[in-house]
Length: 498
Image (cartoon, rainbow, N blue to C red):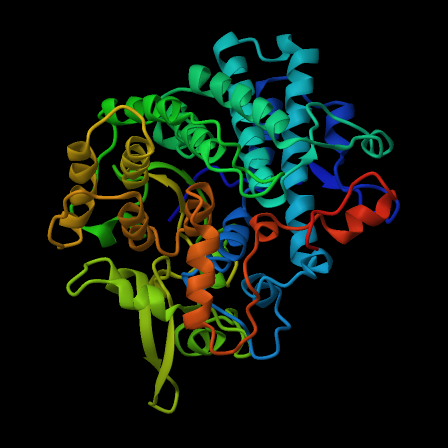
């Protein structure tokens, strides 16, 4: 069971007025009688972490459902994730898209408030090292959230300090390269000022290696081809910069691959040697566990196997795609811990339901569908190794032999034969199975420039429903939520294609 860090502290709430942009938190605690000592600031930083509680659920729908790993056209198309899976052009009106925008900016504004207050009252945190760490944690979290926004929406309002709702009405969307500049600056500060690790009581806080790993992802994403004029790929060719950061993580000798793949996701083996950084939850009936496992399973399966309701209803299940399922080689040890292939219903009949169950252990479920006692593995050492191989295949220093060795370490653990002369396409196919259900596939396809060809070829074969639209360059990012466009006419322009 978890015991750390996901502390539910309602420090700030977003304005919900119809005539105000949902960018600015109203801080009851922040103006009077708060931010006076290290405990206040620690509590406030915990409040920034708290905004990540439902972030993995958004990853499932925006990055896994969007990819060729899940087939979920829906019977009636009424579920938000069905519309996302189907590449509908009407996504701007989805409540889900609006919630993603609002909640992510809420986290950014919490981080900004902490940073503002640290600058205004530095003496409140007497220990300079602690003060710097709190700043570095806040900047890390702000960078992580802005990185997600850039990948989801392209241009976004760039806000580096607390603003009022009225002030927010004057802030236009900044170009992607400008937002990246803040992200990189924040992550460089974090990587230079965060500790490499924490004692058990603080495990789950951002580390220097977490910052370096995210910054490597940023450089990989920026280096990708320009598929959309406001998309995350800028063609910057910064693979050597990413490689250097990844080597720092590898050369630390602090992380390693576990011998058994399934052990990485064992409820009783969290914070293991393969986890570079994860989102920590607490659970055990406290109602502050994870929700993201619920995003994968069938409601019908839950009624049989869990003591609480939840899951995807029968009109919109999230099925592992046939293409992914058929891509596993015989004896691949990653398949069984990742995919549930059918279950027995109350009548004793086999239900042909194939969904991801990598993060699901019915015997250790929490009190309800919001309370799964399992951390979210945001960055694994296997990902660090395979990103290094990607850098070398994209032209960074290194040899084909090094690339092959990395991929074969991954394949050996999966009980598969080694490969030679690994190409970028082969690497992505290996990543697809290694990180299935971990919501990396869509980003992998976008940053390598393969997304249009791969997704349209997949749709042509997989989509028996005929509901999934062709993927175009406009599909690379999501629309600005319609309720944001309606707040002040002309402040934001909608992304093309929506």
